[in-house]
Amino acid sequence: MNVLLSIKPTYVDEILAGKKRFEFRKAIFKKKDISKVFIYSSSPVQKIVASFEIAGIIEDSPQKLWDKCRKHAGILEEDFFEYFKNSDIGYAIEIKNLEKLSEPIDPYLLEKDFKPPQSYCYLPLDYFYKKSQSNSTEREYKTVFLTEDNEEYGPEDSAIEENIAQIILYSKSPKEKAEWVDTKLGSLIDFVGGGTPDKKTSEYWGGTIKWASVKDVKNKYLYETQDKITELGLKNSSSQLAGQEELILVTRISPGKCVIAKDNIAINQDLKIVRPKVDMSTKFLYYFFNSTESEFIKRSSGTTVKGIRLEEIRNIAIDLPPLPEQRAIVSKIELLFSELDNGIANLKLAQEQLKVYRQAVLDETTKTERFVPMVNVIEELGQGWSPKCHNEPSTNDEEWGVIKTTAIQAGYFNEKENKKLPNSLEPRIKHELKAGDVLITRAGPRARVGVCCLVKKVRPRLINCDKAYRIKLKTNLILPDFFEYTLNSPKYTLKIEDLKTGISDSGVNLTHKRFVDLNIPLPPLAKQQAIVNEIETRLSVCDKVEQDIAENLEKAEALRQSILKKAFEGKLLSERELAEVRKAEDWEPAEVLLERVKGEKTGRK
Image (cartoon, rainbow, N blue to C red; front, side, top):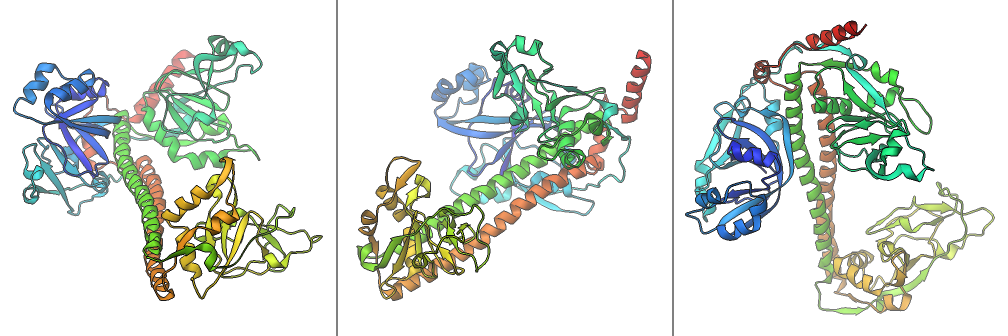
């Protein structure tokens, strides 16, 4: 769930300037699952100008709120107390990850009969995406509009229903890219290369100038670099300085990746500063390079390290829209990506919650009154054999192999994780794994010791290693599945953690005696079977949900590329949005921009 928050332009300016880090309210959202807040700058601006995430919400008396937040309140003290004069309690929304839109969004173009909220309104996570995908067919959306005095803050939710607005959007995609020009990157951009100061000259390194290499290009913006150089290092090398808000492009190792500099940053020889010859939106170029990364890779050469020549980059085709349209496209991309990122974050949160649920399900085995020492239910326990093997795995049933500890995962056995036994060694058949064996790692890094799985099926000629216990159970007393679920439950994971011994986390042990003395639950076999059946039913549901989440994460990434594709095909903005863009004072056909560059070039000759 997102929120559209109405804020007066005076305070919006303070927020965007970084001076106002708290937004004050007399009442606060009842819903807790707020992913992002979009700022609607009220009259006379009347546009969506930025978004932010909520770092926290402080609830207190107005006086205490002022004491806590005054340094970054962004409001005069008398205005603050005038606002809260009839309130005993107030709220301060702490702002983090503020993102200013490249071009403010006119909500009246997104919604027919748009009504700005007096305070705020809830928006679904895919709100902006749905709006962008709407066509001339009528589509209905529900948005809950609320004022600070709304009954939402009381025990009843009936007032919310009365405030639901039915919003119908009529929107058509443009049929052609009007006033765009088809050209090459080389006609629009100069690419400035970098370099590396001599590594042997200590006076060149450890200064205050940020110096970027490929390893620093990770996110959209570049604030800090791993290495820094001195003024002397910059002067005595071919490194060049990218200015704030300039685009830096990777041409080697990860060709096509790019980042926007948020400070003056020097670059090495694997990077290029992107300097447009015409007025262009930096973010437009950033998203363009994102959309053409595969083209960069295709044009690159090199066996171990890929690189792309400048001539190849200059020949990459680009359709250039007018500058105001570039800004509008960027704003639309950022809105859609924001919704997409929220959706991805929620999917990943669901994945984490699913892990917690899986663990809670396994605790069902411990809900019994009877516990016995583990040794009572063990028929046989021993560690395997780890001779020097080939580095490659045994891939067929005719070759003997020795499992690696990575074959043992919590609740899962992966027989492909093995090493082939040399023909010169006689296999120790007594350690050959069989279906029904329970394996638990006994030595290694702390995180990998105590990992348990049941071998439900296994190919022939696979031997247990010496870093794992192989347990054969008395199946007339305990079911192997019940035993495995117990050892993987949160309660027993903690108990086993306490049994580990060792000085360093890089090497601990699970000793035989301490392990088998552990008390484990032992209900009657019939109850064990019922618990196993219940766990497996619930885990099968988890598996299906997990699969759905994984598929949706893949679709989300595909959707990101689809958004970029539509953007640079001229299909992202609606006709109504384009009509608004063409009213901009600096609007002119892209061809005029290009002709200006050619004219300047001719003049210099």
